[in-house]
Length: 315
Image (cartoon, rainbow, N blue to C red; front, side, top):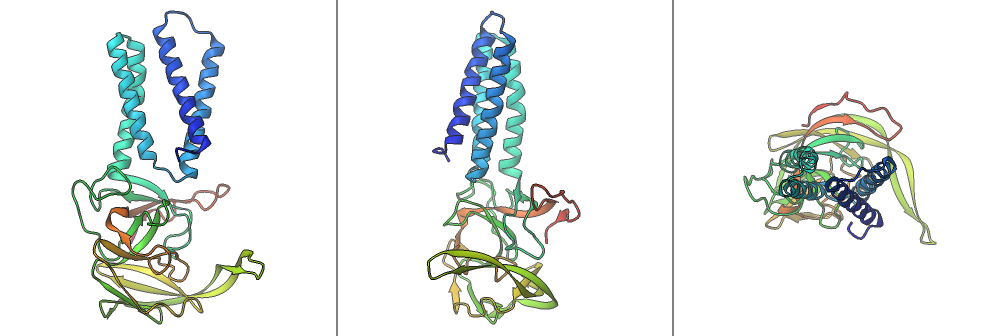
């Protein structure tokens, strides 16, 4: 992310605005109105460039908030040293809300939008979730062993992880823990030789996306009609709804044994999910981001109207 031109432009622009503001606050000269408008415009554009860079590169906004709170605190100290009340009060106005947002977002709850349909039918693309950051222990960075209050993830948890092959957070269902053996036969999961309880609910017509490779090497994604079977599955104390797509992935590898310090995760949309059965593989303990606890909004596209119909606790 630090090599992204938008990120560099944002940092440089914000730095110029900060030093200009300090300089003019210290100076006793009256500032021309056009200079104020000029600095404000640069600040706005730089801030937008910084945010776009963070979201485009799936960067950690928490690090930016931490840096912002440190900068605001340093400027507060500068105001005290220079005995400049204007600098001190202005910096304090930034420091307090930034540090509060940083603490809430880093240690308590962080919003997360589901980027794909891998957790359908219950959790859909566009759903906004609140991720419990202290469910498995407190840590500052996204990746790393919790520093305080370490807790073991539970079977069936809807976990948000950082895949080993990709810095973008995924949401999946925790199926297996270290030392467990997972076997899939005819789309039924066996955990340490015991089949997970599953009850058939209904059949539904669905549309899935499939990738086709032509002889020329071109890869094309097409939407095709399919049939999905819904089941209520139980793992540990958790009950949730899964979908099996008929005719998809009928042959799985025989079994997986989860290595120590790692976990096995799957999407509820079993045949349309990149998880431990595919590229994601086993997920290290330090790559657990948190547990998805609540849905607070659904927003499928920018032109769609946000919906709060599904708001509530995630099962």
